Image (cartoon, rainbow, N blue to C red; front, side, top):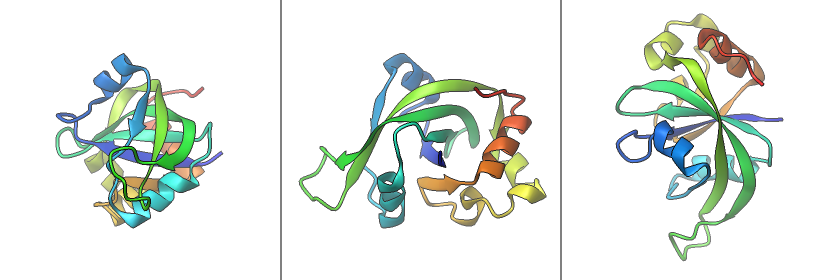
Length: 138
C-alpha cells in the first residue's frame, strides 16, 4: 500500500462536503508532478486530506476507490483523475505548523514541495501524522 496527501481549499471542497458526497473525482490537477502521483495511485491506497489556504491542517483519511483515467473536465489527454471515498476523520487535525515543528516530518513533501497539490507520504510519515492526530487506523 502507498500513502499520499491531497490538498483542497475548504471553501472550494471541504472534508465535510467530501463526507456528505461519500465519493469524489479528484479532477482539475494541472501540474505534471501531481498528475504523475495520481497516475501512481492504486485502488486501496490511502491519502491524507489537507485543507489548504484556510485551516492549513490534515483533517481526514481518504481511500482510492478507482485508479486514474482521463480527466473529464478537459479534452487534453495529458490529465488524469482518481476517485476517492472518505474513510476516517482525524480525532485532532494536524496543522502545518505542527508538521513543520516536528523534525521527523521535515522531509515531508508537504513541507519541501509546498505548492504540490498531490504528494507522496511515506509509511513512517503517515503513522506519525496519525499519532499526532490521536487517531487509530483502521
